[in-house]
Length: 492
Image 1 (cartoon, rainbow, N blue to C red):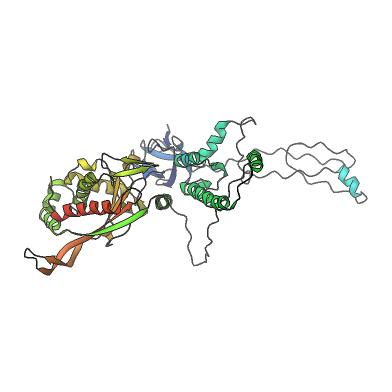
Image 2 (image 1 turned 135 degrees about the horizontal axis):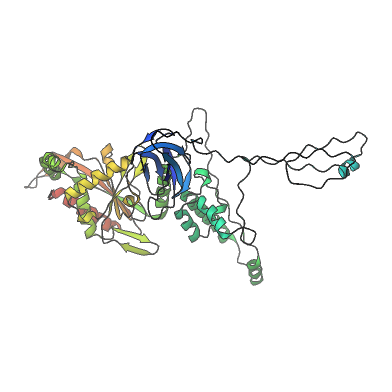
């Protein structure tokens, strides 16, 4: 007996998912809990395991197709069972058999009444027939019936015209995510009028934000230049039909030659682009950079890293120490562990640290929940676990949501420092530069200066100047620097 494989719900706010890749082919055996396809949602990419053991007998949804949760995407039969006749994803439904063409009417017959059905070629006119007589005796040919593949998808009927409100909502849901629909509702935008750039012309968050931004820009000059209407004109304007919103500005053209390779953005790349562009438009970004002397911390780590690995099964890197010091500084400066909600400030009592993880196909930021309650060992375990599951697509949606402050580590690739972009709605992100030995000027107990070899690195804090003043940002990083340079941590 075949078992249905459905599109799972990867979180409470997720209503649909896109199948990005099938890991098994029709007819191949599958084991229970073995990954059979990959999906991408607005929150996370993940591999979906098989609910049972058997043979993949049918694939019902093609790669790149977005479907609602609980949609049957495949079927798994018993082990050794032959695949169904329709083994792969279904092609578009074929049209019904067309009725036979009506026989040609006699030349002397009266003009026939128009009937539904395929058109036929008009009967040639007799040579002696005049044009006027031809027009009277010969019916106009009906337009050729469009083929099923070329026929446009019928638009949903409006209420009162044979359609229902639900049919319009279904169309909107097919073309947008819950987040996009929320933005559209807040800004009074009709999604059905937008041209989407997503899969199957879906309207993405970037599409609707660009439309809203372009609408504001287009409206600003007209409002500034238009003279104030006289009272009579204002009354007349109130009765006028509303003007259609201006179309989005055209994208700049790029000359593409046969030497160029053009590929579509992956879903995770599109989401990253949308989020980064949104953050730059939202937050007033400022970055401050401090140099930190890690020499005492490097000595502590060197003394304990082998025993720590042997005892606990996880490596002792610099990150757990930086996480721990950051938690202490966030408790001291709560405005950095906050969010902006409209005209309100939300101060978070708990610290949920986001840690940026670089993947071969993009970037993702899993969250260490309640990082303020974890020891160095707990932070080390959480760091290793989340990074490993991010790279194997086994993160849950709730594990990449709810961060209150983020740390990114470009130093692992050799970068000295950068100016990271704040993930919304947070107000700060810390960039950790490369930690390495460098010659620096040191001062001994007698106050004499000398050139010494120290283990140093840079910390760069990007902060939202709408909430955090420069002095407070510097005090935050100074407190973090002080804790790290002392190098006094409990490794329990």
